Length: 422
Image 1 (spheres, one colour):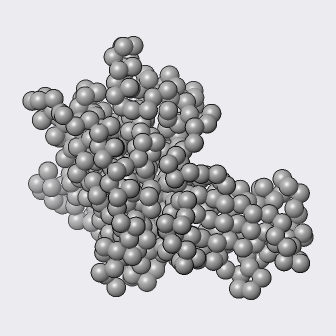
Image 2 (cartoon, one colour; image 1 turned 180 degrees about the vertical axis):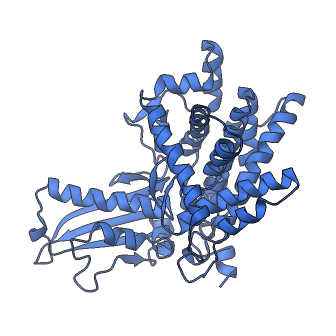
Image 3 (cartoon, one colour; image 1 turned 45 degrees about the vertical axis):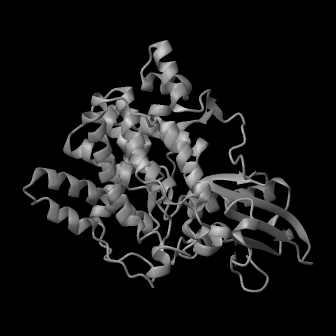
């Protein structure tokens, strides 16, 4: 069972879908629930907001507290220091989910009048009060596709003589093309904004210089066409990743941390190769279907499965999109997506100082080039032999790898580069 592909592409503020967009939604929902329960602002003395797990360990660099404070601007956040609480003492193993938030509202007598628990499960998606370790995505009426694997999808396409886009259009709401046109426009705008920005450095103590604008300018003069294409794709991916790191509006694809890969492809095929919008929109559908399978059968959260779940899945989406745009078969589309993800298995999530900058921005550039390489493999190697590894197989491996991965390498900034780079 799969949800609408609209859940893959969400417009929101960077730098993190799990750490910014979902907390934004949680704070907004908590205020709404207070109003629905007739708890007016004059009855509430203050609100406690406590972050746990990955949210506590990397929330400062991800601007989690700032987005929550912005939403709760009409309330006192604490009767002592008016700050979001970062609980780094509670072990990850004691949490139901590594991205956990608790909102508590108190009256003037310090009496707790309302409490809600929220879980940020990846890609900006939120769960409230009820979640299990073994089944984050409890089945509900939001599920619109009767498929749980790509093998099931392929069988259905063959039995009903349908294309992959015909299948998607069959199950999605009629406004899917309009929705994705808005997503495409935002992706193009994000690249443009990053290439035109006058900001020289990204926010935060890393003092990291923005390079997308200068990289693009230098790339224009490259004579070798192969090198030029790769560096154009890189500059476009950097552009969005730098916008995301600055907290600007971007599209989750499938997360904020991996938001540069798909817009890079869209920008190149629209502005360089002059593809029409409908073809690009149809390709976004295909990429999102693979992301939906990853979300349902493994994860797209760095706090759950490491960066294989973010950059790895985004690169797999990009590979499928490229294969579709270049009119490859359904088998080759799967081959491309599988090849891209397979070779990101085990990739750790280790943001230095909790910022979505090092190694995240460079990984977006590398990720889009992996998409391109996987597409070329599907185009030129797939016809020579049947691939023994399916996309479903790689998702199973990614899920198992993520479960086994040391928590220090799951968006906690306690291992990998985050521990080496000061």
